Image (cartoon, rainbow, N blue to C red):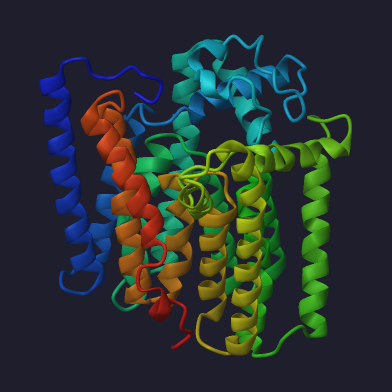
Length: 432
């Protein structure tokens, strides 16, 4: 559907939209009642429900997202010897290019080196058949999803199992991660495992796991500070010798793995910066940066020229938000779970101000932070964001070539962006 292969019968298509929409409303309403304590779910039931979701998602085809086919094409291009991190035409001779949307056929690779190497290995096992590749990917992602389930039950298995409920019942890891083969699932699994190791006091192992997450997808780079924040929080001291020593070791670990995984993929280490330069040059969409720029220049006759000049200025506002969040954190670092509140605020800025685009599966990170905070204001915000943004996918079923699909896509996009400031004054407080 993401590439225009919609359901042709309009009655069937619109009926499916209504059915999925109503079902999603009922599910999200029930989930809020569970997380707010109105409904109780036993830990064993959480596990059974999670396994059911895993099986259903394993059998689901990736019809909302083009990521799987893009991964095939980039991994194939790497196996052909092409420069995927610097050549925008690198997938032009890939046998899978016909499966990739025309929108993404002339872009450099923005996936992490570890992802490309693992996916290339899966392709070598599955050979040249799309279906065997899909099966290989699904098996690998399902194994990681099962790992996610097991760790979630350990991390969130407190008195009322709030953490397990949030991590496993929120429809992100199974619907967007395993179901649509979104690579965020693997990185999230690494980070969740790192947080679990932090709770066990294994700081260096946590840095190893977070380094793997970053090299899986660069979006996770801000998670690198989680071990440091966790140490500060548990010791109630800022930047002791122990913290600096651990951070230094963590940086060395990241550099070691980074050099190892990038070396087969690049000839010049300047190519590492190419994806960042590519992102900086792309026009934002469905973010605060995009909406504010459009709003300010709506009646401007030279829209395109002024738009490109305005985007960097709005991103400077994002930098100020980063600094403000950092100052607030340093003032409140002794508060309970301050580390996870701070990192949640950081990723709100990353996804909705700095990112060139927001997509529903980006929210997959937030349950990892919120399951420790046990803040109902943040939990409600997350569920509203998941609910609103998921209608972008439902709009694809409705077909954005028709009015219903266009209306759903616009409303979902605008509402999702506006919801980033929902109950913001209460959410930024560091109250225990």
